[in-house]
Image (cartoon, rainbow, N blue to C red; front, side, top):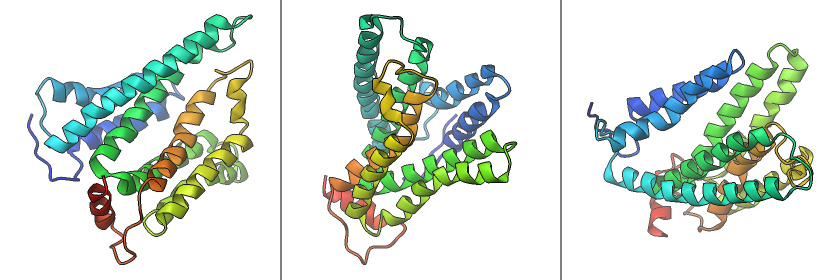
Length: 251
């Protein structure tokens, strides 16, 4: 199978993989066996590319993805050491230690995703698109998880996705201000949802680390990216092309 896509485009394989990931997570409400779909969608395309059976990425994309793999190795290795040290040094058995694998997978996957996108798109487009992607995912799962809870609960839970979309809109207009807001939002959300309890006696309570990585992670990563670069001229187009060019020239 060989596909050549234009730079910046999304191949059919990548889109199909995204559908599998979303469907797999959505179907875990029926059976956790459907998590296999997530694994196929997340890692299958990479396996096919490394075997040489699929050619749907250009040289820059492959370089960014492979460099991101090393970043994921570093982040995952450090997280694994910290988690193992926490469990084995505890005076009492750590509750929910069975969540270790899920937490570690969230760290590895998120690090790889952010690093590969940053290496290919640069900070402006990466921050903007990560916010849109994660906002859409959070909106979908909040709708699916609260569809039977009534209109009020559904509306309140769905509002969790609003900051992602608002900040994505602000990114190309006031990048550094958006960076500050992103970091501030990460701190506020972490405190509001009591995620600081990850440092307490029950660090691996179901979903706690994953929420930190997949909800606060995009906010913090986007904020750090935008604070580290200068803003492009106000006359640049809003489609992001000018921001990508400016970001690449600044690296």
